[in-house]
Length: 105
Image (tube, rainbow, N blue to C red):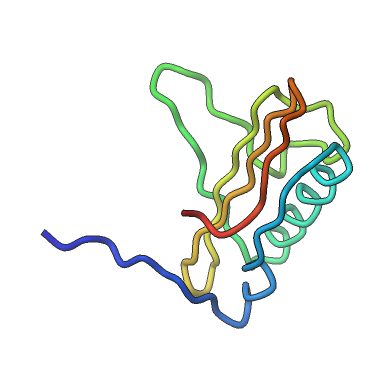
């Protein structure tokens, strides 16, 4: 059985997204959401919807207001439209423990 190829290198379109950064507060989350929305709107990133059986779909990044209010837990997965590199934006907003943006692991 072939294992899926794990991409470790980004392309010229998504190379600026390679650096992982922590989301330490509401301002960081607002900025991360705005950046993700911009990359999706510009066609560089494509959101990979997260679906859980027997649950209504999670909102897409374009449906979220960058300044809130937010759900208690947020998680968004994206892929580069050009090289298929995966990225993840996640945050826990209820207790304020933060989150991060970066290449998906």
